[in-house]
Image (cartoon, rainbow, N blue to C red):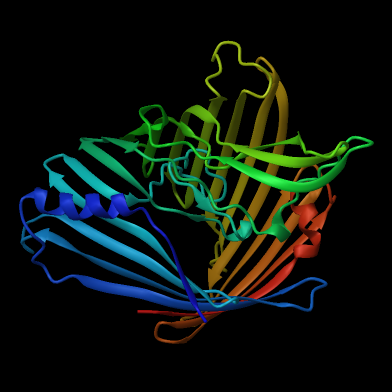
Length: 416
């Protein structure tokens, strides 16, 4: 028998319903409805089990607020209905917001996704939304209730957000978790495990806020610069394992505590379009747990920088993207260690039915991932995709630890 679960933010829907009429007019334009129906299958390396995903149905209702000729705003409501292999039905609220046009200012309220990053694979400036990392190679943003104000001028824009409630990311499924097992001291027997999840409460101290200032220049085919500031909490937990005594001597319970650290981020980005070439870069630095910017303690500061180049290969028409990232974490004050990764993506549309993509990634410490992908359009709106994720290299390094999770996937998708 199917069960019904849901993960949505009721007060976010309430705000959407209350604010929509406040824009001055009701929605009179005929709304549009679109959606997708998708299901998939996967075969893991050295596993005889068939991993079935879906079916998933995603629907979206969107329309204008006010008259069709001169709308005063717009709205959008989306949701995702899923059926898993155990027979459980899950409904997740997607983007559900109302936006009002107030001259140069746009005000949006409701469940939203915010994209401040300009690079494609690694985006250190995309910090507003948590992610669903059930399948780490297909990480998706989770819309959250927020208030967004966008102000636009001649050659510049200011995008700011206020996020009232904390929302955490969905952690990877067990097979993707690579944390080492906890080993108790000699003479201690662990008789159980507990989890304490310190989810930040809805208080003034836990409000998240930030903004991005963008400026455009008439250089080559366009130059965009951006500055970002954000303060919030990490949607991924910092686990800490401790031993808790029981009534029996020598026996203890292993308690894992999840804390979601506060951080302050400052970053910048640029996009330069030249003849047949697009250069992108973004960098962000963070201090954690209210650390002193001038002299952070060990583990209280981190940074990430990304650079990419995108172009189309002449004659063969293949689109190429190369992206590199460097991650830095401090070990004392502003001294630290750096790790680097690189990604290459080649893609092309062969004809009206066939398209393909090839992804290669390499961690400079000795591990990598390769992913060929091909899509075939069966009929109007109906397509089939085949994907392979192959992991290799040092088993103690990132992708190499997922060697046995190498997987071939096939999906069937209908869009309307």
